[in-house]
Amino acid sequence: MGPKMNILKNLLNQAFFKYSLFFFVFILLCGYIAGCGLGIIDDTRAPAFNGIVTASTSSTYEVVVTWNSATDDASAASKVNYLVFKASSSSEMSSYFLSKSFDKMVTGVTSTTVSSLTPNTAYYFAVRSSDEAGNIDTNTTTKVATTYANVPSTFTLLPSGTTNDMYGVTFVTVGSSFSGHGWAVGKAGTIIHSTNSGETWAAQTSSTTKELHVVYAVSSVEALALGLDRAYVTLEVNVWRASTAFNFDMRSFSYNISNAGKYDFSVGTDGVLRKSLNSLSLSSKTFEAISTTGFSGIRACDFYDDAHGVIVGENGLVAATSNTGESWTTLANIPTAKNLNGVYYRRVLTTLYFIISGDQGFIAKSVDNGSNWTVLSSNFPTDFHGIAIISISPYTFISSGSGGKMYKFTY
Image (tube, rainbow, N blue to C red):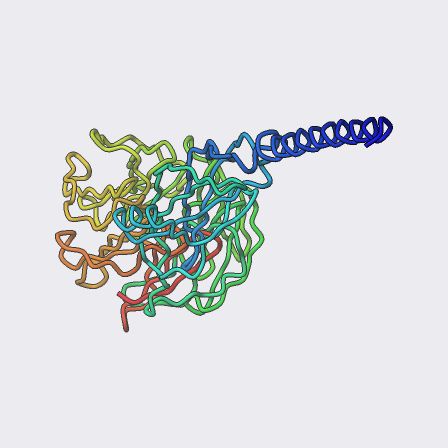
């Protein structure tokens, strides 16, 4: 081989070595960028995530679950997945964590609705985050929510014509006779009127926009309503007129309009129970506080005579007096810890009717003066307030509620 061929050979060997080395370095560099620089192939760290924040019942079949965004060192927030777990118990939830059996997965959001649930059933919920590399955090935060129950078949929803929250309800009664005339009052001065025992309702022009909580029917053409901001309106010849206000806001009123000389009782928004002697003019009454030491959060009262009455309130409070409020006895065996907003404690002929109403569709009755209770409805999305009787054949009542809901039910 001549000198020229040796030179050429050496040049080729140097070029091959040079470009082979360049190619090798290029491959290593690409691997570094893909594996380390972008954090995809070698990403083994799960997102930082605190888990579920709330689980809120939204309907008979759905629960809304929320959380705060996770942070990850490789995946953008919009790329983080959230695994929503649903279980019937804490032990079942633990097994789902181990098997990674989640109910649904969503990406880049902070809430979701879990659907197709069973009514009136408690569910456990948890949320874990996962990045693009499949790393899943291990938080164990769990929240419990109970779906609403179906409305009982014994309850009939009546068309009220309003979506405003309704508080007080009343119907004209004279002994055991019922004329079918009644009124319900509520938010923003709403007043609705029925002439057929609540089957249909029509709005009436109110002389106030204040929130009304109490309504009392004097006759088929006379009534009065009271509420917040010292609201007081009277119905005279089918026209509602503003009248002189009280010196406190009214939330509940037990009015003995047909029993001259007896006490009236009221609960203000301040939670204070008051009594007053009847007078010819309701607005001229002077109220005095009744001691309810040991009780807080009182929301409503009712008395069937001067001595015997009941107060109800927050967290399932029910207490009774037999001496015009000089002393009170807390009733045991109340079948709820929900807030109670209304009470019907009245004698009709010889029968004492004792009904309590409250949040989340709760209504219960007692036929033995509060010793034992039967729950008529519970856990559906209407907060009940006022209660009024409309018939004794059979014994039938109407309760006013949130969202303009008016329900008729049998005792």
